Amino acid sequence: MAKTKVEADLDQPDEQLDRAIEELRGVLHEEEQRPDVAFRAASSANSSVIMNIPVDVQIILGSTEMPVSELMALQKGSTVALNRRIGEPVDVVVNGRKIARGEITVLESDPSRFGIRLTEIIAGTKGA
Image 1 (cartoon, rainbow, N blue to C red):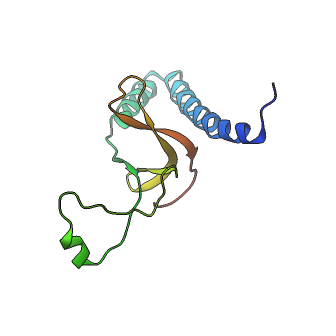
Image 2 (cartoon, rainbow, N blue to C red; image 1 turned 120 degrees about the vertical axis):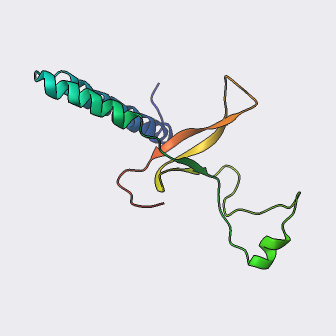
């Protein structure tokens, strides 16, 4: 059965993410296969160091601006309206740089928690 244009467009970000992950794995695998043992050991150590660097991942649901007087009036039970509507994609920000957008989803493995399903990878952007 042929996919509609909308279905094909929805699959594209998933394919882009899969392609990027496979490309990264391929580069790391190529470095491990180089004949120079000293280089391979250093490369493996560098890969290990790089893969263990912590990054700050934030999911941005929305934002708002308010005067200090409104901010100071907030109390338990107050509601703050955000600039996004229900169902709009949320931003995935890594170390201050927007890298993707996604939709909120309930985790299949734990229905008491939620996560983000990536729907779009943002390539080559600078800043959030």
